[in-house]
Length: 69
Image (tube, rainbow, N blue to C red; front, side):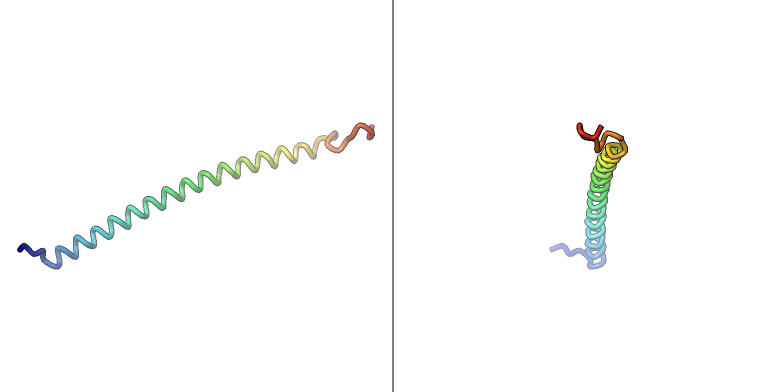
C-alpha cells in the first residue's frame, strides 16, 4: 500500500482549501457586483421618477383646476 507523506498531504489539503476559498471569494465578488449594478439601475429609475414629480410641481398648471381661472 502506497502512503503519501504527511507534509505532501497537508500541502495538498491546504492548496485545496485555498482554491475553494478563492472560488468562494470570486463568486461572492461577482454576486456583489451584480447587486451593485441592480441597485444603481434602481436608483437611476427612482431619480428619474423624482425629477418627473418635481417637474410636475414646478409647472404653473400643476394645481390649477377648471374653476381656478
